[in-house]
Amino acid sequence: MIEPYYRSKDNKFTLLHGDSFKLLKQFEHKFDMIFADPPYFLSNGGQSIQNGKIVSVNKGKWDKSYGFDEIYKFNREWLSLARDKMKEDATIWISGTMHNIFSVGQLLTELGFKILNIITWEKTNPPPNFSCRYFTYSTEQIIWARKSEKVPHYYNYELMKALNGDKQMKDVWRLPAIAKWEKSCGKHPTQKPLSVLTRIIMASTKQNAWILDPFTGSSTTGIASNLLDRRFLGIDQEKDFLDISKNRKIEIENSTTCGIYKSKIQGFTTDKQLFLNLLKEPSVEYGEAEIRGITMCKNNSQDSSEIKDCSSL
Ligand SMILES: C[S@@+](CC[C@H](N)C(=O)[O-])C[C@H]1O[C@@H](n2cnc3c(N)ncnc32)[C@H](O)[C@@H]1O
Image 1 (tube, rainbow, N blue to C red):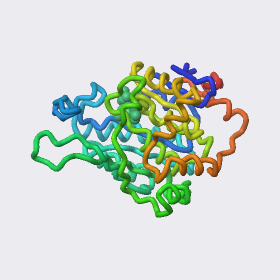
Image 2 (image 1 turned 180 degrees about the horizontal axis):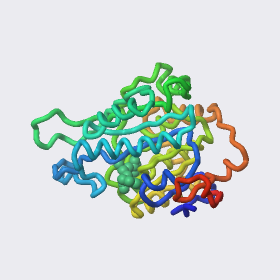
Image 3 (image 1 turned 60 degrees about the vertical axis):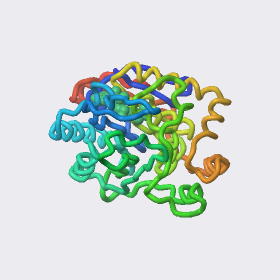
């Protein structure tokens, strides 16, 4: 049985500590959506500029590159495990840059996913290019894919249009990089902004949906999920990052803070529209057991006859 590292009082935010490659094999739950921000493998000793200072681009051991073959193997394994955790109509979003995104794109097709969009997130405030030998890096790619070729996925077209001044939402999103207020519980070196995750979650899930992030870091996915009334499971191998995640969840349990954070999320024509549209959203219906939490039904063994425990996470 897996012991959660943390589970919130409302059961809507659960964190597991450990290697996703091992943990994903140990439970049976199927999710409505996955967001994954895997290592981009760009920690290669380079330098960049942050707040006017030269800083190393190295994020940590987990982000060090061991070459194309290793990156391909890593991506192939976690994508297969993640696919197994998806409901038939579920979708997956994966963020990346040129360092990993081609490998991810190729593998999605190889593994039977159907690619739906490649979102270009254009950062409105990118750091300057330090070497002056390339264009300034100002974008990240986010691939959106569904589990299978044939089973239709959910897309809240009307909501995206309403939030975009009644025009169809495009696949280029101009949103700022992480803001200071989002780091109130500590720093993760590659934390994603809530504005990016909010848009992703609203576009592709209904209220109550179950969302998984296998590389959760500071759990921006989880915080955005809970702000929008979705449920969340996040996995990370670093306790320090899980502690930031936990503190971020505790922070939004305060209703005033929660309201302030919702009003600070950018990317919509007006703040008011976000709230009005959330009230009109459809909701996923679940059975009683699922509402209480994820049911853990498997131990480490691959043999289903050895299933020993069925307790709620
Ligand atoms: C790019 S960061 C995710 C940042 C996150 N999106 C956020 O907003 O904070 C990737 C995370 O994956 C974690 N990680 C890398 N390999 C892992 C593995 N095999 N199992 C679990 N976590 C892993 C790292 O510790 C790191 O926190």
